Amino acid sequence: MNRIIYLVIFSLLLLSCGERKQEKQLSDLEIKMNNIAEGYVKLVLNVGQYDPVYVDAYYGPKEWKPSKENLQFDSTAYKELSSIADSLLNELELLSEYKATELETLRYLYLYKQLLAVKTKITILNGTTLPFDLESKALYDASAPVQSAEEFQKVIDEIDELLPGSEKIEERIVNFKKQFQIPKEKLTAVFDAAINECKKRTGKYIQLPEGEKFKVEYVENKPWGAYNWYKGNFYSVIQIAIDFPVYIDGPVGLAAHEGYPGHHVYNVLLEKNLVKDRGWIEYTVYPLYSPQSLIAEGTANYGEEILFPGDERVKFEKEVLFPLAGVDTKEADLYYKIISLQKKLGGTGVFAARNYLDGTWSKEETIAWFQKFQLRTRERAEKYLSFIEAYRSYVINYDLGKKIIRDYIEKNGGTDDDLAKRWEIFTKLISTPQTPSGLRD
Image (cartoon, rainbow, N blue to C red):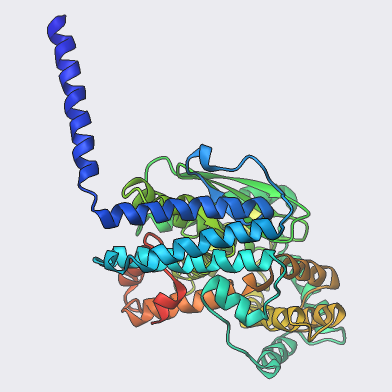
């Protein structure tokens, strides 16, 4: 018995010595970098006390999370938080030697851009209103190109030809799409089938850690259509808004974007590769208004595309989802032609948000724009405007993010004829520190 106790004690001593030895292996630069990362996390959490949606996810040490919420921002808070942000940025600038390996360089650039965005958020909380493009550049490390109304009108004209009639085009399209609406009582079955297919396809190219999962909740009265709330330990809660009709092409898009290989997979891989494997604490917090959001939304949007190359998505939906939803496939081909054209109108949201938030357009002018160029009912147009009022320049992250991700992947060999390479690069982007400007340089 004494020998057993001795062996247990000896083993524990060896383990303790091994841990101390591992700690000593960290260089001074790594220790300083980790300290900056810790300061960044605590700063984001403190800023989150003044904006309830700012901290999108946090699964770090519980004792770091402030107990107070919804505090009133004042000059004292501004001075204190700005001083911390400036100090962390200064410390980071002194650590240029840290950028030894490719991954360390990515980590350095990521933290620098994230801290600049936090600094910007503090300035905005203090009452500063930035022009749309300057705000997006400061918060998301990118600004969207300016498009013309003529570009969008050409697309509207094409849809107009496909759906002839005397009613307004937005009324015609709503009436046409009614036949592709999923009955509420069948939503769960259709979404489950879409999620399973997206997970199966993702699993062919990405190895996910055991135990990863998410649950789906159906909600109402939200400014967004769907949301992924990442909880840590490879677990997400995905909420889907059902205030308005959900059409047959919706479940695959939402399952891919919010789940596989979108936000859920993105957060899972970052937690596995950077937090658990490397101890990079900065990835336990996700400030919504930051460059990370452009990478997250861009990869989620692009992930929808690579998951179903060619006509595979249409084929799956026709063969599996249409029957589950009890939807007739008779006019499905026309439906998909219209959906394809509508995707070309993605930039209309940024166009309108820029004009509205910069004070060029009134609320009524903006709603009218959404009705005309996004083919929304007035009710849906007002709903989308409420999203812009709440999240402002965040709207650039979807289409621009997708373009940045696509351009980078294709430039590095992930072309249509090399699907494996495309997935390889995509997986790297969602499991390593990335910045929008870094992908464009």
